[in-house]
Image 1 (cartoon, rainbow, N blue to C red):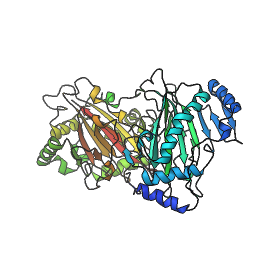
Image 2: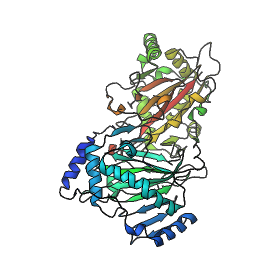
Image 3: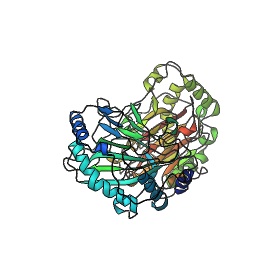
Image 4: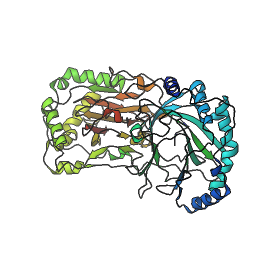
Length: 527
């Protein structure tokens, strides 16, 4: 459900300008008049409420296409009601106020990107205020009758998704939320019901045996004017708002939760901790660094300059680090997708959506990809990193240096979440950090972009950070995130202290990558 707690790479529209344009296209269709909200009489009938409550309590489906009622029991309990408000003119009035009076806040984190209004309890505009009052005083009582849930209060806000906006997989299990709801507004002539090509559907996921969501979505509910959707919030209610693909119309909803007493939802813990994989010790196989690395990065003065830059900035981007002939051979082998290259998804959909190469299968069969992995694990490369950073991953003071290597492939809709790092929880993390080495083997726009943020910002929206210039890959101001952008053959080194974590930015469908992938080697070294 759209998050109340809390620019992609294509051009964003001015929010109010888009809404004004789309409303103008339906000039004369929206009439202003004074009225209180009321749901369709069929949803208030005692007969409907009795049948619905029985189906809801038994967790079985209940469908009546003629009246627009559809209660699903799979993958979790969710109901859609069509023509919810009996007077559609009131929806036009709501939209009119949303266009003219809402003060939008841009939200942007690892898993969401859209605009949101303040909570409607604080909004003083007429129709929005009346709608919130209707939710609080009438819909909540009706919802108690339908579901048997004891409810205490309602939260509500407006959400607006422009092109490229989305809300990735989550289950809404926060605090005392009991019933989540979405009311859709699309009162424009010709687009009252969205088609699949416009995106923005509410996508539902089934869970695996460990209660984590699985790809792909098993159900998609597209936006539709005057549609009301609600579901029971629990550990199984995995869902997302798919990326909006329409350039002409925004996705607009009023959404939130009905809250209630009782046991609070348990915190869903990550099934993976990527830093736990830093277990590989340096191998003894000898490599000539000059066979793999451009000569300029092996010169003593350059090594000293790199060390100084990392000491001052905790990061550096080394362009054209891998020699061109090696880079070409690596990409060629990856694109052939030989039978010994085993790609797999190693974690749940709420943690990331990108494939990793099975490292054991690589090492077992001769090939340049296996050579690359062993090169990155070699004592010689550990020593080069020591010269670049003065970290004790090699040298006389080194005790038990270790490394983790992962080869990922990225395409549209790929991402990783902030759960991919947890140095703050590691014993001794305050004394020494982790050196991340991100190596891009090829590039395709921003596919495979990594973003580093401080732990203090993990749970808050990253606002206005999407306006960063393409000219300064790997740079950031003192308060903003660090952006690592893909460049073929570039090695990016980031010294990650315990107050930092990273995620891989969502790859927009608008990149139209087709069958192409971006290949990223992600390594972590610790003393």
